[in-house]
Structure formats: C-alpha cells, structure tokens
Image (cartoon, rainbow, N blue to C red; front, side, top):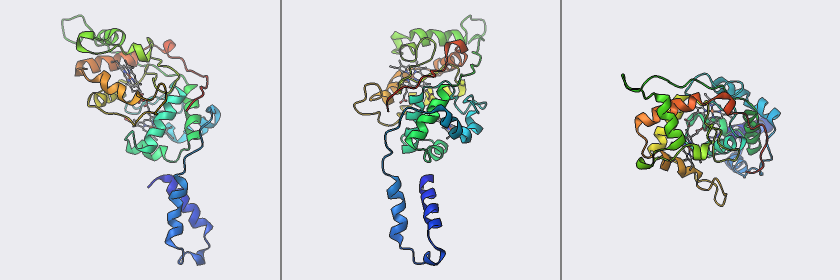
Length: 257
Ligand code: HEC
Ligand code: HEC
C-alpha cells in the first residue's frame, strides 16, 4: 500500500465523525486510492529552496547536501535535476525496483521531485580517491589507469564503448534527464549498478517520443554486457576519483519533463 494511500485513509478517518464510523460504507474507503492515482499535473522547473526542505528525510542516507557517507547509498550532490526527477518517478512507479526508495518516492508529487532534483543539482559532490595500486603484483598497470583507459577509450575489440562519449570526459553527464553525472560516486554503488546492468537490468520504459530518454533505459545493459569483473572494478574506482573541479553543480534549472 502506498504511503499516499495511507495518508488519504487517515484523512478520511479524521473527517468522519466517530458515530458514523461503524456505518462507513466500504465504497467510500475504496474511493481513497482511486483519487490519488490521478496523474500529477506536469511539474514546473524545480525550486531548490523547497527541495532542501523536502530532502530533510533523505539526509539520513544520502547526507544533508547529497554527499552520503555510507558507500551503499549513492551520492546525489551535483546530479542533474531532470535525472533525479526521472529516477524518483521510476522508483515511485516500481519500474526501478527498490523497496526503500519505493517508500520514500511514493509520498512525493512530480513537483516535489523536481524541487528535490533542483536542490541536489546546486550541491557539489565530494570526490573520493581512485585506487592507484597495481592490479597484479610486479606489473605496472593500476586499477585507476585501466579504469581511465576504458572510460576514455572503451575497447572496440571487446565491444565496450567509451563511457566518456555519453557521460563526458569529466564524468559530468549532461543536464538533460538521460545522462547522469558519475564523477565522485562511491565505487561500491557504481560497481553494484554495473553488475546489475551487465545482468540485463533495465529501468522502466523510457519516455516514448522523448528525444533523449526514449531509449535511455536499455542503453546501459548494452554498454555493460561485455565488461569483466576486473573492468567493473577499474571503472568504479576511476569514477570515484574523478576530480572535484571537473564536476561542478549544474546550478541552472532546465525545462522539460
Ligand atoms: C534508508 C535509506 C534511504 C533513504 C532515507 C532515502 N534513500 Fe534514496 N536511495 C537509497 C539507496 C540504498 C539507493 C540505491 C538504490 C539502488 O540501488 O537502486 C537510493 C537511490 C536513490 C536515487 C537514485 C540515485 C541514482 O544515482 O540513480 C535517488 C534519486 C534517491 N535515492 C533519492 C532519495 C530521496 C529524494 C530521498 C528522500 C525523499 C531518499 N532517496 C531517501 C537509500 C535511501
Ligand atoms: C550511449 C550512451 C552511454 C554510454 C556509452 C555509457 N553510458 Fe552509462 N548511462 C547512460 C544512460 C542513458 C544512463 C541512465 C539510464 C537511465 O536512467 O535509464 C546511464 C547510467 C549509468 C550509470 C548509473 C548511474 C546512477 O547514478 O545510477 C552508471 C554507473 C553508468 N551509466 C556507467 C557507465 C560506464 C562505466 C560506461 C562505460 C563503460 C557507460 N556508463 C557508458 C548512457 C551511456
């Protein structure tokens, strides 16, 4: 049951006089969820100030400014407004499956999601440090260097595209809804996502007719298909170390849904 439904039921209970409760027809109760499934009106460009207030409940896991401490919770600081908005909608619909985020997203309206997206977009991500140790003892190639090579150049022979082509040379993605910023993200989170993408995970159905997001959902499953465990490890640590100065907050609100 969605939390909005619970709220609707609570509101119904409060507005019903105690003497009438026994006789409350079942149909009236059932009307609650029907009313809440009406589509939200299209969201306007996000309001970061309102988003900051709304994000208070997210801070326990994602950090006050979107820089989470526990590496299993992704950093949201510096992420693009429309990307955050789209992911929250995917969690709310269940298309992107995650029990925790389903709960938090189901109480948010489309406008709330844009406002939250705007807040995190104005924050600056705190980058981590890439692993500079050699992959194999006695050899020169480090995890960070293998990650850099794959990120910037891919590996045509193994059908691995350059991540840079879509996520940008500095991992900033672009402010549209499709290409997320990656720089500074916890390696644990990136690794987990890449493994899931390799296993064929697809988030939702994209937005039909939308020039960028129509196929956004299937892209990463294709990209990650031929990545080895070693590739994933190298990419994850390289991305975590991508430099602070290279991932500035977008700050600017972008129109679109
Ligand atoms: C109890 C911990 C917890 C709380 C509280 C929480 N989240 Fe999350 N969130 C997570 C986890 C874990 C993930 C990773 C889910 C996955 O692996 O798909 C996540 C993922 C996300 C993502 C996707 C990030 C990406 O890069 O794709 C967004 C956006 C997000 N959360 C926003 C929020 C917002 C907004 C709130 C508050 C309204 C919130 N979260 C509250 C744990 C939490
Ligand atoms: C053709 C464009 C394209 C290429 C090339 C590409 N990506 Fe992506 N990537 C995307 C899109 C689009 C998404 C968002 C998918 C969505 O939201 O449905 C994404 C999402 C991701 C995510 C999830 C981010 C998050 O916050 O949850 C990670 C991690 C990622 N890509 C890593 C990589 C790596 C590593 C490479 C190189 C091996 C790469 N990508 C190459 C388009 C691309």
